[in-house]
Image 1 (cartoon, rainbow, N blue to C red):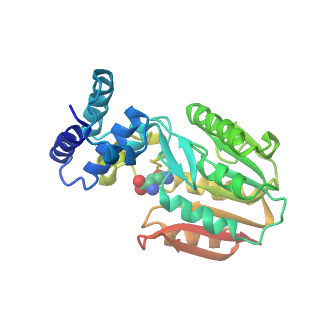
Image 2 (image 1 turned 90 degrees about the horizontal axis):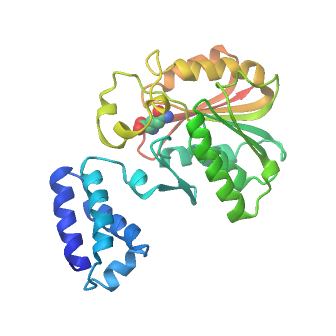
Image 3 (image 1 turned 90 degrees about the vertical axis):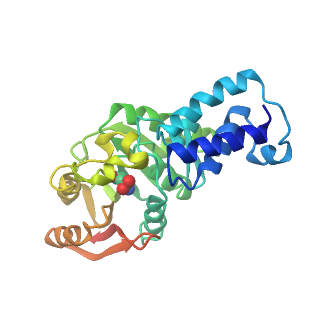
Length: 286
Ligand code: GLN
């Protein structure tokens, strides 16, 4: 079978399986370029190339899994975040563009040049590695309660250090339960994209989230329990003059602003994501 024929067939199959999936063509092309280990442009340059049986044998199971709803990032084994290519699989949440927006805001905070920062619930290491890349003089602590997530983050941090010639001394990765392992006044900045979805939220039954680790998505108390633990821990672990940045659900902003207000924060700003939804709070500690 030719490249263009396989793509046409796959687009139809994905369209039928995931009705309304607007990315069927892109998905088919990405899966095939992944199998062929070529750029997507190759598929357009050589549509008439005949595919080898071993390529088809690798491609069809991926197509099947995509039709079952498996996220593209897991099938390709990688996701781009902040121009870093991160290895991802079902052990970690797939990094989202909304979280890049939080990274962008955090980088502009008036923090000391040699800040010590924490990324809590780092998952693939996305936030921590983006911060380490942009701020070579920061010391970045990345933690996760999931030992499996720590393994993925470790792989990504090693990869990133090799690619960017970065020193391992800038980065510490460990397994920890939010801030319970850290001492008083440890951090100038604490960032987190914690689990914040209510267990009964219908959103969990659709799309990529169905395949992501529940421990990275769901939190008790209407999705707020883990955020509350982070805020409580920051009372001791965050330095005066430091900042707390937390991603949250679209309907949680007001409650989190009120929580931070009760904990005595100043300059509390609830930021919207590019879709116009309240998505992450940044607040300064007095
Ligand atoms: N933003 C993700 C979603 O709504 C959830 C990520 C999280 O719980 N931290 O799909």
